[in-house]
Length: 99
Image (cartoon, rainbow, N blue to C red; front, side, top):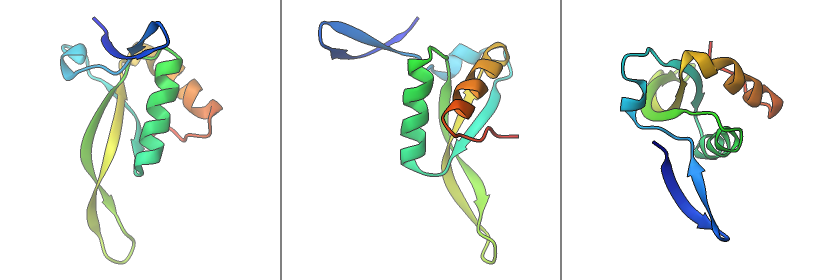
């Protein structure tokens, strides 16, 4: 059950991004919180190219040092069995996994 994306040449790109029901019955692991759109877009491309199934959800995280505010970021989740592979891909490209 893949989401089929745009056509590239004569082949379809298969997106590894999944909907929430993909994680039904499984507690997904948070692997990254993208605070910038460029980071979210780059990580989506990397995970897709590596064949890692993931989900992205917009959510709030605390930000600011002096003036605390709620900011919105892209939260990346994977199934526990793909956590190690996702982290490996992230580290290879300079991303720091969520703790």
